[in-house]
Every structure is written in structure tokens, then in C-alpha cells.
Image 1: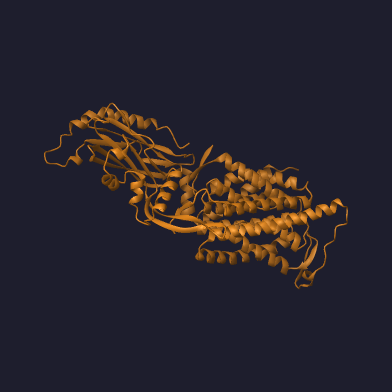
Image 2: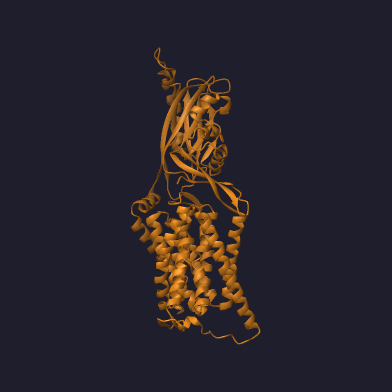
Length: 264
Length: 302
């Protein structure tokens, strides 16, 4: 349901990128002594810088694409793509049985929990990088959860992962980063319909011999547009007018119904 | 046909919402209740966040009640004077109930308190209604003459008022107390209170079933308008797209329900409503007792 075809525009962009790629790699030669990370060993781009949430929004796929200077594949380099949503504080509660009925029991609070998380790579990330590096870059839901500030109780941490996965807001390595022509790669990050508006970040990492040798950060926004945006803004900034409008509209709908369906 | 709800921030099938609206609206017209006690749990069940479900449920109840109210008004079943007494007392009661709700929240376990309230109140009201209406049906079968309304200590109270539509001449103290008590309960349970009001009017005030339905719809309409406004101001969780979709199905259902209600006898209507209320209470009780499928819950940090 949440899958949607990537717009033709993105495909065009990919084609344009293909044409430009040789030029980009021609300028690559890093000056001697410069750090390897800043060289254009990796160039990546997003299919759309903005996801528009309108009344027909059912989720979307964000296209991440790019090229590398060396061959990708089992014998060569690998690409890892991570998508991160805006941070938010959340509480996880456990239900317990008291006097025969289930009540909300102990709670654990986690700070700066990314609203959205997606991970994709050309090969399983666990085999590409050491645990320390994965932990630092938050590659994998276990690594992400381990680094969250808040309760240290492992049961609550794994519950947080399960709940976020169940709501499609967090996912890891569901789809691979696909490679074509040896040096072009693309990945689709699934955005669920419950995605929150805000600023999102996509990190593209180039891994060679168990080390991250290049990194690129891209950002995109999720925005409400059209009627969806106007309703959300009215509810937030004009609550009195919005409340009165809701009452009037509901009453009007009720009255219209009694006129239309009048059975005499 | 998916549609994105701007306040709930999620995509839901529009046909599902239309269907839920139709079913709840039909019950609303048939029994003269807003249906909030049924709608809110249903919305939560399909994944709408609880605050949005409560606030939009109140807003939908308003529309459905207006529709049912107009239908009942045309049949001359609304006792405006009784409705006004109940409403004023109800608004005072819901203000008091809101304070009690704030107190419960401070003590924690507001979810538990609301669930227990639902089970106890719905269970009691439902059981009483079923028992009484079955007796009335049995009495009719045996062709015994129905007892006329008996005089009790209620009729010795001062401030008597004539309620012409309901053919009553009683003190305004009992209706005011009924309105106040239901105002408190409806603020805590987040419902219009029609399912409690209808039996209270019949058994406590001795009103005829015909006028109770129209009159309770009058009260429910204004109480739900009040709740909608308060929710929009305090929590901002009224989703107008959700409301209008529910109403589109709901207004149609309410008209059919009202037309069908006139064909049913009073006792039968009451027995059916009683069974429905009991069923919801039983469902909520099972939820409290059964091992939940998810032992953990997630929510915004408090």
C-alpha cells in the first residue's frame, strides 16, 4: 500500500547523472596530502528533495542514487544508505497484571529517538564494518537503540525496536542497494503514510576494506501541502475558529443528511 | 480508497470509515443515543490515535445527533423544556467532571480509570435495561394491564414544573440531578451520555420512551458541541476529515434508524439497546482481563 512508483522525473535525473558521471570522475584526482574522505570517490543524490503529503498520500519511496569511482560488488567497494527522521522523545510502557486486570506498569523514557529510520546496503552491513564503526554511525536498529539516551533496560529497548518496526517507521535492510553497470547504485527508502512532517537526513557511506572512506549527507523535507496543510495549520494556530468550524460543518452535514434522506 | 487524515497524520481507507459511520449512525437514530460509546473504541481499534479518536468521535456524534434530532423533531418527540433543564445541569456536571478527570490524570492510571468506568457504568446500565424491558415484554404477553406511573417521594419535592410533551408534572430537582450526574460521567468517559440518559429518563423520571429519544438527542447535540470545542482548544485533536467521512455514512444511517425506531415497540427498542450496551461492556471487560497481544506500548514522552 505504501509503495508508489518513483516519478519519471527521478528516472530522468538518474539518466542525466549517468551522462555526467565520466566528467565528475575526471575532476576527481585529489591533491596530494588531502584527506581521502573529501574526494569525489562517491557522489549521491536524492530523487526528490521534498515529499509532499496531500489528502491522497499513502506513503512513498524515496529514491537515493549515485555513482562511485571504483567498482561496487562483493570483491570491491560497498555502499550503505541510512535515512534518519527528526528526533523525538518517547515513552515505552509495559503492561502488568494487577488484581487480575491488565494495567499500565513501569515506563521507560527515551530521548532523541529518530521518528524514522531506514537502512539499506549493497551487502549485509554486519559483514562490512566492525561493530565499533557500526555503533558510531548507527548502522542497524540494535546499534541505533543502543546509542539512545534514556533507560538502560534492554527489555524496553528491544520493545521500542519492535514497536517502531511494527509501525513501519523503522526498517533495516529490507531492500538492498542495487548496483547497475558496476559503479551506479540506487536504493529506495520506504516512507510510511504515518511519516511525520519535518527535516530528514540521508547518509550515503562508501565502504572499502572494512573502512568508511567517503560519506555524503543529503537532506529532504516532508511537508503537508494543499488542504491537508491548511487544516493542520488552522487546528494549530486558530483553534477557536477551527473548533467552531468543525461544529458548524458537522451540524450542517447532519442537517443535509436529514434533508436528503427524508423519508415521508 | 485511501485518504490521508491531516490531524491523525495517517492514511485510512475511506470506505471503512463510511461503513463505521453508517453502522453507528443507524444505531444512533434507532436508539436516540449518540453512539460515542461505540464509535470511540472502534476508531482506536482501526489504529486512530486515542486523543484524535475521542475528539473526532465527539464531533461525529454532534453531526449524527443533529440528523437524528431533526428526524425526531418532525415527529414531535422532543420535550424542549425537559431538554433545557437536563442540558444546563449537564454542562455544569461536565465542568465538574473535567476537574475530576484532571485529578485522575495527576494520580496516573487515567486509562485504567476510564476502562473501569466504562465496564461498570455500561454493565450496570445495560443489565438494568435488559431486565426491565424483558419484564415489560413478558407483562404484555400475559396481557396484564401495565401499572401506571406510581407516585413516590420524588413527587413530594418542591419547584414543580409542567413538562407537557412528556405528560409529567414533577419537581425540576430529579432531572437536574440526572443531568448533572450524566455530565460528570460523560466528561470522564468522553461520550455524549445518551445511552445513560435514555434509561435515566425512563426509569428515574418516568418519561415515555417516545419523548426520551428526541429529548436525549437534544442534550447529546449540545454536550458533544461543547466537547468538540473544548477538545479543539485544549488538545487540537479534532480531525475534520475523519469526522466528515464518518458523518457521510452516519447521517444516512441515522435517518434509516429513526424510521425503523418508530416501527419497534418501546420495550423492544430498550431491550436491544440494553443488549448492545452490555456487549460493549463485556468486550471492554475481556480486554482488561485477557493477556494483551502486545505487552509494551509506545507514546509521546510525558
